Image 1: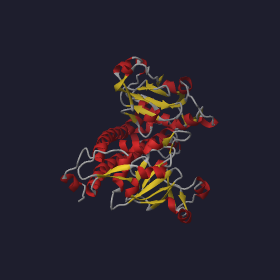
Image 2 (image 1 turned 120 degrees about the vertical axis):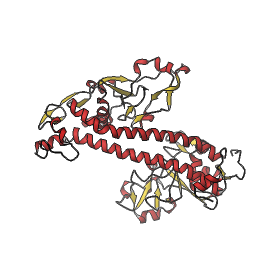
Image 3 (image 1 turned 90 degrees about the vertical axis):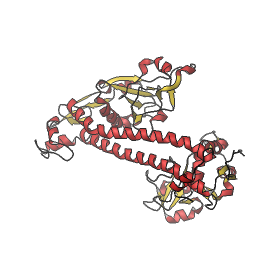
Image 4 (image 1 turned 135 degrees about the vertical axis):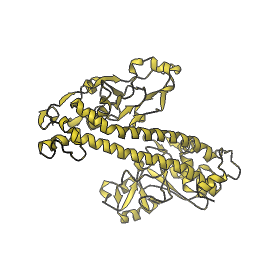
Length: 454
């Protein structure tokens, strides 16, 4: 058992001592595609456990209420803490009081804790299990043979000790850290909405060709606006379509290789035998850094200036677009700073700065083809620089690209601002969590009042 340097008024207890129940999800054969129904009791799985709260936004598969009743031991409710014991181990999230549903079922890879609320606040326990110390203890009984898993998860979890402050302090800590999480989550959802707007505009102009078809059909006339299209853009779009390698495209537009838009650079990892090459000056982009964001801001691994200079031809300027082409192909990100990448990533350095956002969205459009090898269906295990450079891309008239950039620039600017803000909030939260959870930093009476607890 870990020895805590407990703050005054705190005590230590095991999960078993503060839990009403610790239980596993159902057997694998109990929930399968054949048991899904259009509505009923939602099934929680790993995609719902990325934050400290169970996330309802990805949507759910459902089983019937009768089926859920037969799996009573796997039913969870508001206040329960859900953990992953197999696969993406270490995930921890509690079901908030304002969750979309009041009842859920955990999947075969999850288990859960139902806390005794006379002793602990579930949010506090979840925050502890997500803290570095909590994760260290949770994963100490991990097996890496085959699929990563926590051995005997229920039995082991019951033995884990946690520090227990008085209930008012637990509530205050949970409130303060939860407020940070709420803002981070709000920013994420706002960015999803903004990205959706930019994606919809790209699809309208460059996939469905709505402005061109509106002119062809007589729905858009000179001097008149079209919904979402100012009248002054009328002359930018042709009024006819022609056949091309990509199917029908607007007359006067072209299909060119992706490298027509700019220089293609394949990344490289500096020599790991040179510790001086690694520091905190230059972001070094790898595939895990590309998930869930539009911009490269700070990466898990950073290079020193010396390390970046050792392969200066691999440095990408701001506005370059990076695409993962090995292992997890098809992820796309815009580089906000001078950045380098590893060899799993190909990047485009635009010839014209105005190409940057168009290339980003066109690569997003190409992403399914990069992942699956296009209509042929063969998977690219390794899309090398030559194959990536030769990908066919729509090359509109420059004026259309410039107009598109004017429309999406404000959306991108807001997304970037919110991503920067969330990055700062994550750093604040990650600094506060171990200090507050361990009692190293104590809250004063004002913090309790702000949290609305007594």
